[in-house]
Image 1 (cartoon, rainbow, N blue to C red):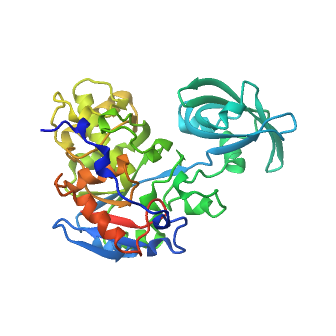
Image 2: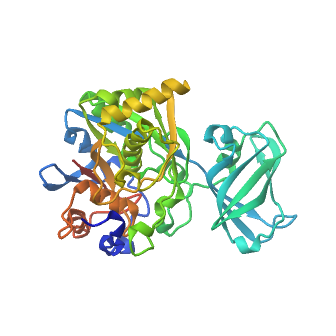
Image 3: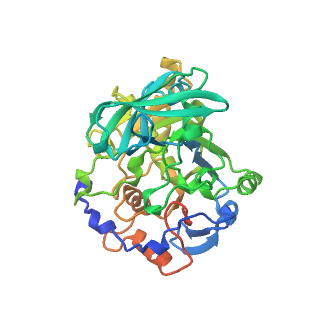
Length: 411
């Protein structure tokens, strides 16, 4: 049997013309197309607002409540702020490392960042005079370390009445995906947020959730299908294609996850089919299972290594047994929310443990997200089902791809 690490990424490539990439969402977000592949392998084209009727009656819908932050800050060098443009893209909090505490900071905080035009920024602090809700302050950015292609940047300001959350909300920009090939527009501030987003922290939207509207959620409620939420803060690594020939050489990015006790208790005992909204919810739910397995063995569960599910020493627990291990951990720590980071790689050969269906978008060629979808479809390597589905969509000029594009329902 082939080692999953030997999978060639060239087998997950497909032609995607720029004109098929949706640059903006539809005016009515729940009117996008929905490609449906059922458990019998039948493929059909529907409209997204039909989703409530298409869900199995024993389903439980789980979605990601993360909210995209205005992570892109633009500074100008020089005392008069009229020099070279330096773009700072906040990726992950460093100090405080907790997202909520970092956003609540009133004097300084630091983040791991991408820095645009980095060669023009030596060691001098960058300053930006601001007025926020009538309050004057100066925001200062100081690069305090470099780590590969990222930097640790300390932000400080001279008005303790203002939190960092208010600063980035006022002067930052929503970091839309690079493949849109356009600047951020005012409409992206609402278009690039889901209707159920309320936990700040992502630098990219969980885009399968963008199609939901209050009306769709109400229709799901009328069918008595439970809706639950969890948190995965999406990192910029989600846009990084696999550049190595084989996936074993690809280093998965780490992402913060948080799941409340109530949902873990339900997962431990429910007979309902778990339908995950988006690959971020898929990664969180599947990571949760493997983190519970690590706890059952006395292993650290603060970070899930990307290849852990494929190790021979992995204990083959039931979902209930794994969730019980997490609940015992929460009892011992006195916490009500399980928090960790995941670097999980899901690729063909992976055995899904929790997720029985997913709502997702169409993904970039050569991406880890396309690998995840292919693994769920359990395709024959000689005739991969993901390719049949993508060829079906590409042959229909009405289908729109990527973040602002159309959706899929896989059962």
